[in-house]
Length: 204
Image (cartoon, rainbow, N blue to C red; front, side):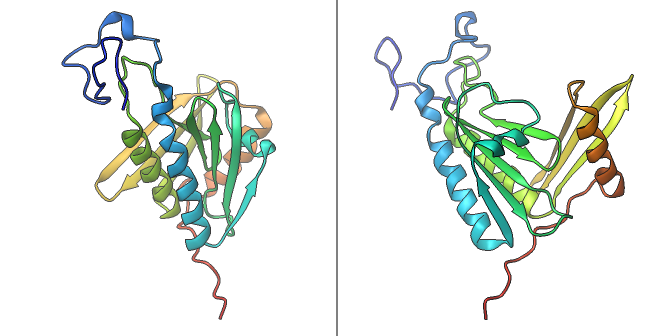
């Protein structure tokens, strides 16, 4: 339970009726409210390890999977790689903010939260729900990436399909190295849509 300067309980996610006050932008208070997102990420890693045929690698170097370095100190990084090259890997980077950076496939990073400022008024439940939806979509093979050049710069796109809808987006990424671009292009040209993760091998 978090309180404002007047001692009133803050109902994150429902604070503003209309536009937020100007003085709430770029102001981050009670960041600890996002700590449960780490717990959800740990549970998702355990779920993926148990239910799919994957290799799990943990270490500081794994954070290098991110297209862009984390803005905050990295406290843990875990890569979950399906044992099938037709499937997209997932890397979860835990930050001291606290938050999660999710790297999915080859070229896309997703942040939970994207922004934790008071104006955005996000709560951990919404961020955890989004993280879970994206992770499970990747594991289900409902994720695709696209890569092209627009006016000379790389343009990276993504699309998720969920049971209750879909989401997609893209952005210009001029900072991608030519080596990373070429490697991703050769893979995504063959098949921009990633496959469903394999089930664990039978131990019987």
